[in-house]
Image (cartoon, rainbow, N blue to C red; front, side, top):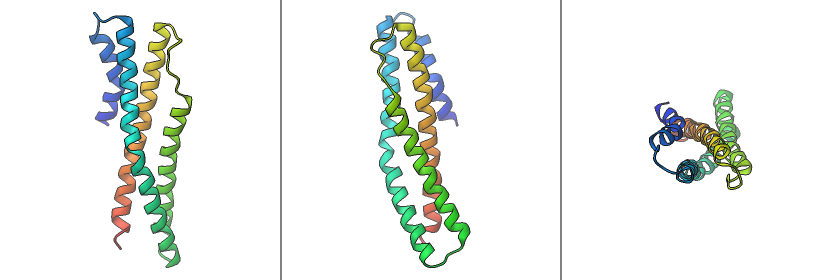
Length: 142
């Protein structure tokens, strides 16, 4: 939770601390922060794919052996959560446009909004990955 709040407050802090920087520098710094957060999230995409594959394989194997439906249901839910996190990232990337043609104030508002969106996507990905890893560790070794 603290990490998520840091992501949300970072753009505002950067803008406030750079009183002497030019508008262009402040805008570039904020855009870099957005893209750095995006890059961190992208680094986790491989984990999402592997976990989804592993959980799907585990679920299918357990279904073949008529395992408790509550476990099957949990695995299905974790797979769906991973798919949702993946889609959230893909959706952000589809809609993001570099603010090259916007006036400075509009660009700053846009970048702050995009930073917040990406922070929410990253938080969703992090929690989903953690839940999926814990579920796989619990049921994957049985």
